[in-house]
Length: 432
Image 1 (cartoon, rainbow, N blue to C red):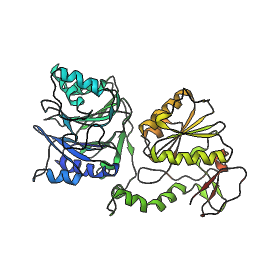
Image 2: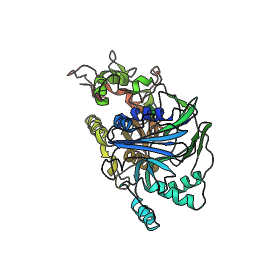
Image 3: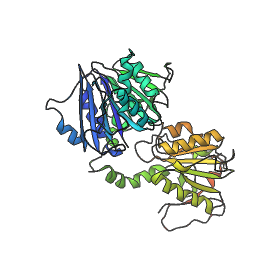
Image 4: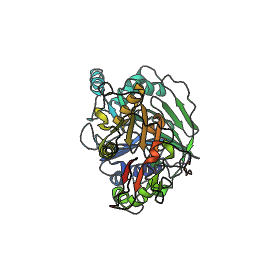
């Protein structure tokens, strides 16, 4: 997954913030990285390879300005090269853009722009965005108007951020790709995920699909697609910045492997009573499970969902599992009693979110099984159950409700390897 970081502030630390943010996003996987910093002109540096290679390529005196954006890219359109790395600019170098997602109509946009005299140097779909902004600027539009006009022409998923020379403002927009804003004491941030700026602030605003943001040192303004100002809720994330790093491990995957026992304990805490042999999930107290269950997921989440569906079927519950990208509500029998469970660690997986939204439109009950508080899945589903495995899962301890009568309370648990509890009226979870 690609990563975005943006910052504007009064402390003269733009370069340091961008590089720290890129390092905080390395866990997402990437093959190139780059930054664009605004001062009297745009200073752009990007390299194939790791963030450390980008740092080595920077000027000896560093990079600083009044605002900036950075990006870690995972190649989709075109191979990993310096040229294909983000940020991308227009013909004049008057705007720099970073982008996560897929622009589905980029080929038509690129063809139209080339017909109009624009020259492209990369293989990416992203490069159409700065050229669209350039075109709007040529008609007399303001920078914000040009950014909005360009975004309105995009089809597909995107989180986009742009900076202009001589400006301390960063412009951003999202559609089906996560983007979160950070409110700091000396400046403001935007990123594809909170770890990019958790070292600096724990106050965040989550952008919704179709929203735009304008950030500068004096504040944050969020607007809708029509330009009307939107009131936003500021939330506090309870994370330790150290948890967002590698904690001394060479790689994030190695760290996560060693954290598995702790992750399982977090997931089961206050949900499992070994003495009673019972699982109590307060989040599901008001979930009525009377109809069939349909899991939708991608990747390793799909593998977990396959096992979950099998366990439910073994205990008399009608359950199916679908790849989210192939989930078609028009072809699958559904009723208001159907429960659709989206399994997504990030809560932002595009195909899984698309499937859940389609299920919502049919009137089915939706449940997000996710790790990320405040994610799109957590906000848009009827119910949410948090995995609580890792720093993206912020949760408040609650005492189990003794009055709960949900069928989910009938689940029995065996927490010892190879020991099977006897149960004739519930589901069994084996932790081996």
